[in-house]
Length: 311
Image 1: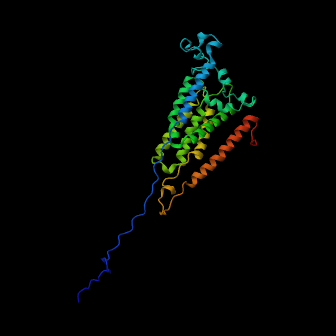
Image 2 (image 1 turned 180 degrees about the horizontal axis):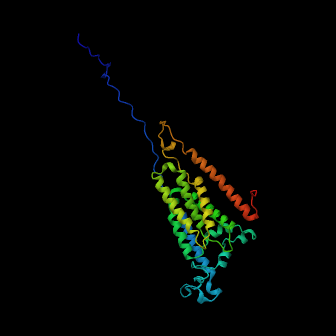
Image 3 (image 1 turned 90 degrees about the vertical axis):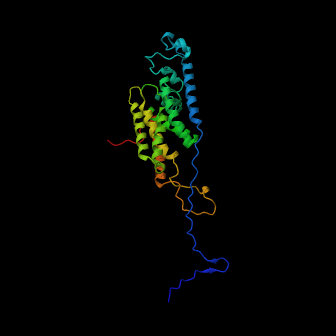
């Protein structure tokens, strides 16, 4: 007998049934690319620093407080001329002017109760050279960060990092007045480092980005060891910014999709918004930041150490 081929199942209306195609693969949903913020706060900070410096030179009025021939560029600048080079090599006002306008002086902060100087000193600069280097760094670093994270987080980061720099500077203050936005700027650098670490999963060239950033930070910190530079403000601002970055600059982990980007009717397994280590970093950084600010403020205003180690 020959082989009998079985007849395929038949539908009376449509004829023989055909094999069903495999089910389509599960859809993949991707959130839209994040839109960059419009940067307006950093340019505003830039303009404010320029205006404050112009007013500082107007208030200083070098020719009215000494021999006008000793004032630099008196012929062209008039009352905006700079102090003699031997007094201020950065082309700027006198120390007395900086103190009167809010420069950081430990005696005024502690004995005079003028704690506002911890913030006001951020907006003053010792000279044109000092102002130019800080403002170039601000534009180079700050605009990109504001475009990525928005003005609220960067504004809070800038102020708190500057406060941290001023606090450590006051604790290690010498006889000179301390001014400048360097503490806040080093805070932005520190935040860039912690942002890279806490958002590690979203970066492609992780090691290259980390290496280049560490080199930039190392060079800037090394400059702080030059004579006449207040490295305490740099270190305090950097540490504050580094801790703040874990709190303020956290991004969703790679592959996270918000529910609002999934059409109704679809049920897919979604990744959690953040990794566990991101929460751990943030909580630890917040505790350390609060303790650091509290301990530094207590030691500065009381002159006593909160904790004394047994000898």
